Length: 338
Image (cartoon, rainbow, N blue to C red; front, side, top):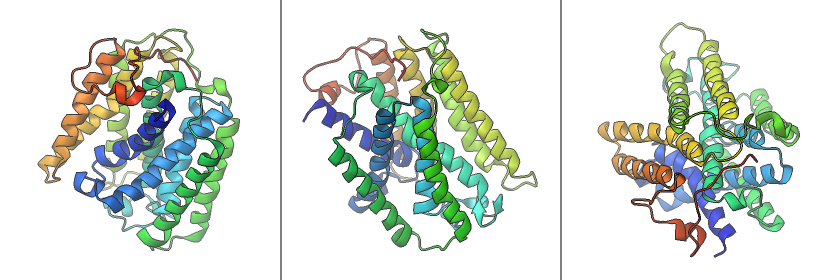
């Protein structure tokens, strides 16, 4: 298999692993079920490949990835599984009533859009860029294969829409969700490349600060999404707070990560959300979700090795670089701006 082929499969697998397995949305037994795995790979794997390919074709930078990630979040949660609209969706809890207006679960919708943009899409692409710096601006798919991946994504969306959840949403809002997907995609194609270009040539923050930033971004958004569901506080409050936290994190990354020589900072930034999933996995295991402690342990070991590798140190457990790159063992990446 070529290096591009390896990179393609790494990215396609990373998205469902991070978004579903690490988050506990699909625990190990469910995640590894052949039917479930095929559905998740078709949805997440195809989605992240389409986003990455479009961002390379359009050459719009990281802001394009973030915006396309938001479009993917709406496509999955709004159009496909319809959790934006279904008040009885299994993961909603109190958010099926709190913040519900015009047949839409607004707090949940904003939270899931942020989650998919940052975690399901941007984080796997960032990991790929760190592992494969030489492929950063290259397409992974030929035109024919790219079109095939789009077809797989659309078929998966149709299966989710008509088989997974037969809830009939308030159609004007459902139509608006479809329009939002295309609108965000249009904006992603035309957003100025300089919008997310780091200000400085070299990083101005130590790596640990990016780790803290990544951890706080995910943990605060996670807490804010459900913290007010049993209160009389207007739903606009958690919505605005989640948007503020996410925007602050994005601006901070842009201002302080630098355009080059930032592999340790990038690895630390990746490690922040993963560290949150480590703690979440332990908590889920203690609450009875079997297998999440193993997921947490493997994730913790990956965090250690990723940061050691980014600093040029020998990895301790995950000696998988030959799998990623063939016989060649690359030096740690110096992440340049896209």
